[in-house]
Image (cartoon, rainbow, N blue to C red; front, side, top):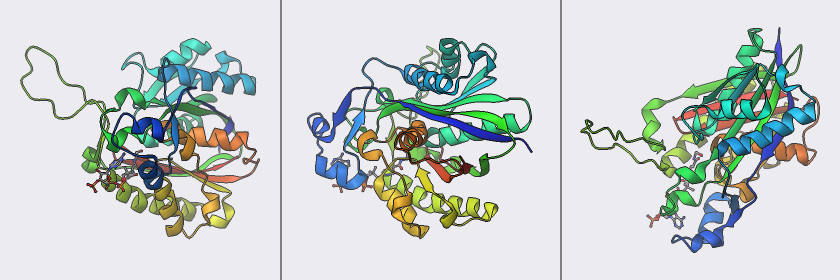
Length: 323
Ligand code: UT7
């Protein structure tokens, strides 16, 4: 059976950072509230980069370090809810910048599950034998869809991009997955509503262009659905948490990770976290965390790692990968 081997972990963050104290100067909040409720201390925000710029930096590092000829890339999939344009896709902008002229490219909108959904789709193309080499990215500039006067959301999010390469191989890579959506609860987290500005359009806009979230509802959803999803993947694989080196959850809130670890009866040390310095970067958070772990020497060949995303849609997805 063909498998999708994972090669390389890279990330790109805008250099400008904003602390909780900085935010307390623009909205009615405090470092104490933000850090105790979320674990976030600072975040990187774009000042002159768009989503494609960050994705291009991460993708360029990936293919250069792997020594891939750009012409050998067959597919670029990019999970984002903050693309530069509706069209061309951000993946097409990455293709052009890197010279991956033989790749077909598209963006995938699954919010905070976007990177894992993108990995899943690329994996299927590889398993079908249609693709040998793929670049899979998650990238966001959430700062452009954040309401900077809304303290309940503007303190949570950050900008960044990360990704991996996938290559057809005989073993390793993506082993098992569990992937879901529940559109009936989609209004718990909305962003990017586009009002119809046609002179003929009569209805009032239904929503805001900015991120709007019922935080408690999403918190409850995540702490219920993610442990179930992780347990399903463990069951499929016949493994237990003892076989897993690390769990890398979407970095939304330290408290969510703690509740999930408790429900899984797993040691908290297995749950990698970098939310303190990065904030919530939606579809970029899992690949950014993986790249950081790689930089710290935490990822070893043969390790089995669980990755799990959850958020807008609502969507959630867990994957068991072998390095
Ligand atoms: O990435 C997509 C997935 N998203 C998530 O997973 C997010 C899940 N949800 C959460 O992480 C948490 O619900 C939040 C961190 C968003 C909020 O924490 P919470 O403990 O659920 O707070 P809350 O929304 O219930 O608000 C509690 C209080 C409210 O005041 P009152 O009504 O109790 O007087 C808010 O107005 O905290 C107030 N508040 C703030 N106070 C200071 C809300 N935001 C702030 C703030 N600073 N930034």
